Image 1 (tube, rainbow, N blue to C red):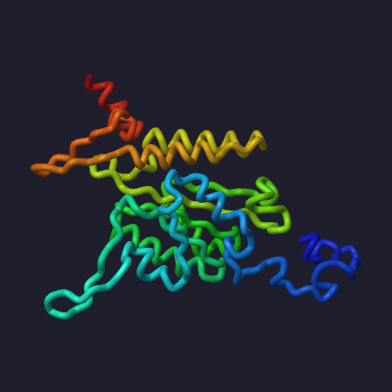
Image 2: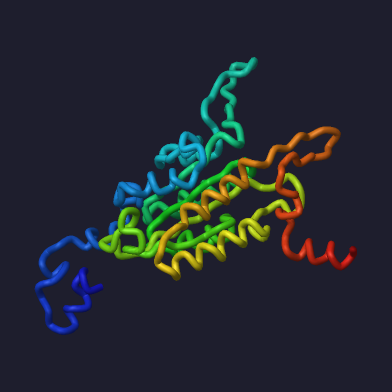
Length: 251
């Protein structure tokens, strides 16, 4: 409000922000996405992902196809176009809508979550017009956190004014509890991120890297309707806290 001029106007200051004929969209750019406003966004996200070639930035035109895991359309034997899908472990889709279009992007992300539950997504948007999309983000995402303007100047500097809202949508598990939201690895990441932001020392990259590495380490062999986990980490870490408590009580 100070840079935009509203705060000074109440005290008779007529030479700040919009009172100097600066456009209001300069302070509240509802038409610009986070990637367009900051060149450090994509490198920051790439530092989380073990294989940077997996990160796929979606343009608005790709929200309706590639964002759903569709990479091409080919005619079948009946000469009808049929979709070909990305393998589940080859892409991480980055959704970066402008605030004015975030509701549309969130609707498509929700559809993609239902259609292809084995895909991973990252959603980023400045904290503007949140009444249209933030509630749905908390329903869909496994991890949601905010990056305050100026906290990481190389990623989201102070002149951005509003914080950046980030949601991570992880693939569903092929066994109970299905969603990773209440599992121990995800809960650990949420608690560690809170400590990182409070300490002002950074280091969130290593925490998020550990989260993505835990996804890449799972391999499932499905036979006779039974999923066999072949991973050094015991599968019990992916159980919810309530499930582990029930198992301890029954034992």
